[in-house]
Length: 345
Image (cartoon, rainbow, N blue to C red; front, side, top):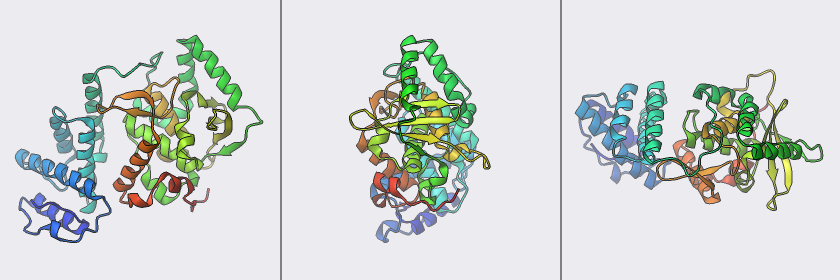
């Protein structure tokens, strides 16, 4: 099989792979029109070759791939590969189906379930996270994704019941961020442009995905700078009867303004681009109680206690732009913040 390096050659290569015949064309000699960076193309080609070889060995159809086959492939490769490498395999399969105009099998429930099991197994193999949050609270994943903003007050209450110091911390946070003297700014999904929507990861119960969705939805919907969002602590998120309030601080830690996440009563608040649901789902799924809101992951996919760095935000945004088929050089955190809205409520 040849190594695809352009949108046109990728289609030819992928089609020949599905029929079991190798293409005689050499895409590396053709001018690339692929919006992905060279490094991403190389990584995707290597991952795709591995998937093709597995399919041939298992006598599975390559294009379009069966979701059950993709699930078995990931489960088989999970033994010797780290989570970031497995994520790249999924991205490559997604990419080659997209350029071939075929339905993406990686979005299926079968693959989602397999990925959830693999992630949990990898994390248990690597041992416990740096430090567990106090007061374990469990909800079904589907409920966390769809009703996170409604569950957050109850979640914080249960956390506080197991730690009286937290109860006082939450009380002070509520007093601070419900003060009428602090400027408020409404944050809504209606502020998103179409390209911003493309950058937001698809909804799935995966911690890194949930973090990225909360992070970039806040930046895009609230026109917030990356330093403002990265400075957020868990206790700056305050559930109220009117909705979720998100306290934005200055560099010196003093209150600057409050994001108020209200949604239209006419249209349903869908979880896909709902900033309050995204932030709440991230907090509950990650089991956060205090400390930095947006945190780093180690090489095994375990959540760390350390705050996410500004450079990590830039890097992740570039990756999401590539995955969305956008030019990563055109997308930085400043543009994500300032992209003019073309969507009316």
